[in-house]
Length: 111
Image (cartoon, rainbow, N blue to C red):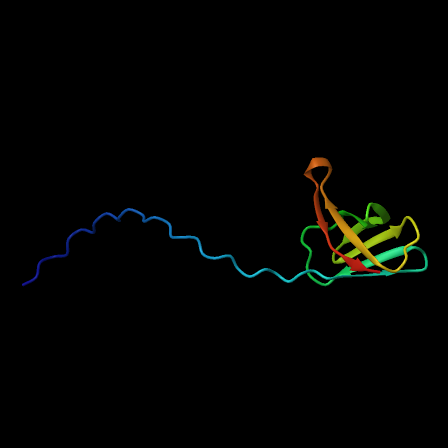
């Protein structure tokens, strides 16, 4: 004949954390396409999602010369040319924050 089941014991101590796994694959590179309109407006579109940049300041430069300034809305960078832009490679720079807290993101694009 069997007796009654006894009281449940206390839970055991928590074990150590395991080793960190390998890093995941790198995300897709963002591609940027730009077009210059007749009224010196430059519009650039990002094909990959760019996070937390709405309202950020932006500029298009080549070397140390800035050719256009503007802002970012969604996946579009809307700038106004500050000087004549010839076809070639420019660097759109997105600046988030102010002063020392600024985060700068750079891409390369052909206009």
